[in-house]
Image (cartoon, helix red, strand yellow):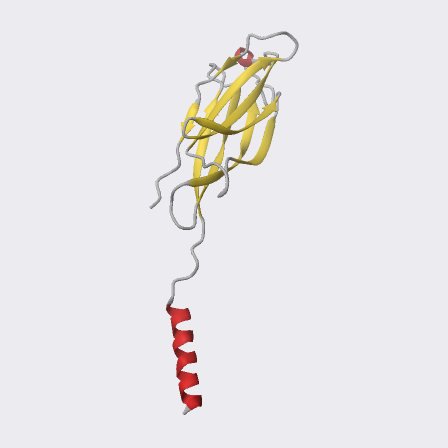
Length: 163
C-alpha cells in the first residue's frame, strides 16, 4: 500500500513538473539603424543593428541594447568623381542611451577614409537603469585644424513593439 501511494505521489509530481510552463527567458528584438553626416556627398555614414533586451517577466523595461554596425568615412575607396574628394575631415558616430530623460550610457567610434566595424553594449541591466531610447548621430571634424565641425541630424530609436 505504501509503495503504491509513493508511486502515485511521484507520478503526480512528475506530471506537474512536465505540464508547468518553462522558465521565462529574456527576449531580444533586433532593429536596424542608420544615420549620416548630412552633407551632399554623404561623407560619414553608419548602419547596423540595435538588439534590444527585455526582461523575462515582462516586455518592459528594456534592459539594455547591443549595438553592431559599421561607420564609413568617405571616400573609401577614393571617389573618382572630383566633386567628392577627401575633404580633410574624419567621421565620428555617437550612440547615447537614455532612461527617460536621463543619459545612462554613451559610446562613440571614429573613422578616417575607411570603414570601421563595431560591437558594444549600451545601457542598463536588471539592477541598474533601463533603456527606452537610443540616439545616433554622425559628426565630422577636421584632421589638422580647429573646428568648425558639423553633424547630421540625430536619429532617435525607440524600442520596437513586442509582438
